[in-house]
Length: 292
Image (cartoon, rainbow, N blue to C red):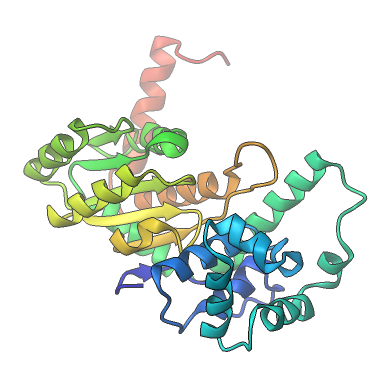
């Protein structure tokens, strides 16, 4: 992974592995080409479906050629893709093999999000990456928070709450030529880290912006949908939280929850966090800001 730190799911929690966790464990320790990383990323995103996809279907899903899928399976130590798929079917939970035919499409979307949250829970059995991210974010003055296109809502939500406890949060939710200028401004003002929310489809501009931020000397902390997302190579600390893909537009319950956990970890490293929250509550009450 080019040396970046990634929160993984190797810790034994006593909780059954999710399909995504098993896939990520299968990929670990293998040096994958960019095309193979793309296949791995697509498989993690559709972890529940992968054991039942043909090589052609997986190739279409990943946007690669069918021979690339075969070479990918061989790189993982299998004789070919049929052997890889057979392995995935053998290790799939009974309930997954049985399918979810009794659920309608909306229920299936909910079940998929529940599975994503379970996977996130497994990863958090080792909370050290989140603690480290909280420390980095709390220490950065100012703290730029980047999120473009599909990830803009996640970045906005984090920045909204972070501003209540952090003295200087700068939301970067619009791309274009100005985003590099704003990173320059943050770095000159003393920023030491940048938080990025990166969700599919991943804009090329996000990858370029994170590379620019690293060149400027900022430590890049990224919440992404997969450890194999394109932003992994330009992130210093990547925290994966899968998105749901069963509806017309992706659902992002796990990334949102992980963002709130980063807020909690950041508050733990901000000595004035509680005082700032109490001050805000007092001012809000004086202004009649909320309906009780």
